[in-house]
Image 1 (cartoon, rainbow, N blue to C red):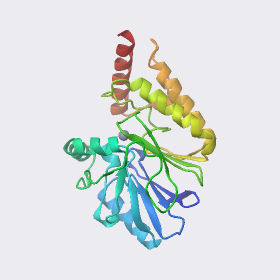
Image 2 (image 1 turned 135 degrees about the horizontal axis):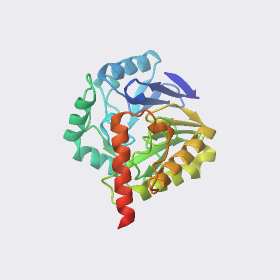
Image 3 (image 1 turned 180 degrees about the horizontal axis):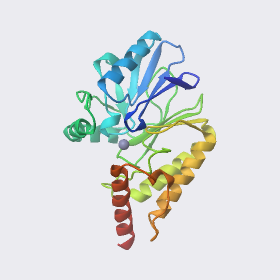
Image 4 (image 1 turned 90 degrees about the vertical axis):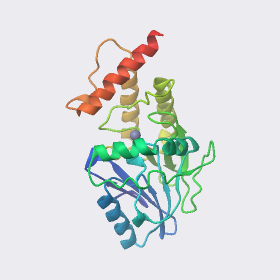
Length: 261
Ligand SMILES: [Zn+2]
């Protein structure tokens, strides 16, 4: 794990450049685990590393109800794993689907903790974790009930599946207005950009404030390009995996269909 800011540790895993974020509490003895990933062995190793550092997991957070953000292992203990009210409801509704997707994605994943979510109150603004102040920035882009965490004391934005340097924006095509939802979430991040020193995406590399602004711009450009007749040349699509190209084609078809209506 690398320390990206005072008391904020990030591990990056080989599968889809997935990140795990650990927020150490102000007293240095407890921690909050955000989206532990990915295989059982990796999460057990994380638990071992936290124990070695003398940290007890007293809280956890799932940024959104996709399988790779709902993983858990007994080694992490029994702390509450919070999600937004909408996110928790959705996680419980798609437990079996998420377990199937996880098994199909890669070997060695423990799917037993997918329903282990504690719903936060509607419109919650601060995580009920005693360790340190964590603002909850809820939006509807990419998945229902998605939320980023903002740690105001160190200016760290834990973004979930947004603001990636390796993946294009992935719209929630089950939503009624996926393009609008995504644009609004990017506006939300722009509004807090001056408070952010470090951005941690769910997939990809950690960036500074300039990189955050660059990614917001790149993602806004991507959204705009979905409306254009000509295919754009987002560098994240060059040499991209088949599934990402499929997501892109599906988003383009959906958004252009929405425009036509
Ligand atoms: Zn996701």
